[in-house]
Length: 313
Image 1 (cartoon, one colour):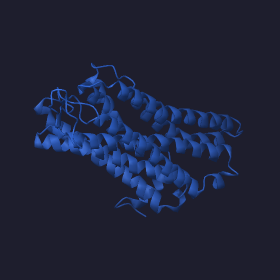
Image 2: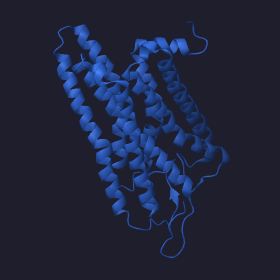
Image 3: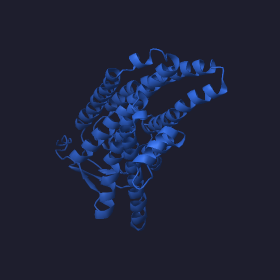
Image 4: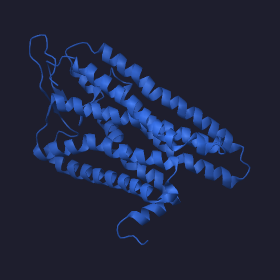
């Protein structure tokens, strides 16, 4: 895809990503830290996926969704970090226009699926705790696959809309992005043409993609809390809440960083803050998810010990 020409007939064919730090002396340290973070994230999430696939006890709807979430986390970090590591090694910070748009598309695709998948997981907990007698029929394999398919379809539509809308903008001036990956707010700042429609799209679709899932998650958990509080035994309440605690922690991190990233569009001064939020979004959150889900879950821990190399079976 070629960029639209500017008013003076010239068009930018590549962008310059400044990365996390501009001091070359710090590049080796940044490279090592992010390579480790990448390996830990990919290793952790693939281990969770392997545990879910090989342990019959984990062949339940909740872990089906968690397995999908692990695949998404590997995808999310793979869209941004490997290309950044490549630029640190080659010392080349130029990114072709098409590559920048592709990165943006896949980032929003995977993050969008994440939004809906976390909602599906909240709905699963709602059915399991509030409607245990009809849970197996209401959350059948067909329902699970349908929820995942709908998540991908909605996220694809959202990512494609933003990418096509961005491709209509003119880029004819500065081409330096003070970030380590291509994203909408930073590209809006570089456009020669009006980004009003794009910002409206980001806000409107953001409400649909994030606002609607948040309302559904809160509604699901309001019912869950009410149902759990009716359980008479303290042990029963503890067990019910423990299955929800991990999910709520992940939801908090994911949506918290997302809101900060995209609801401050007018702020030009926030480049360094954007980088920090970007690290939380693309690196820390996918890296923490396997830890959060396995930390207080003996079933996952047991399955992990069985699939990890060198562990005693």
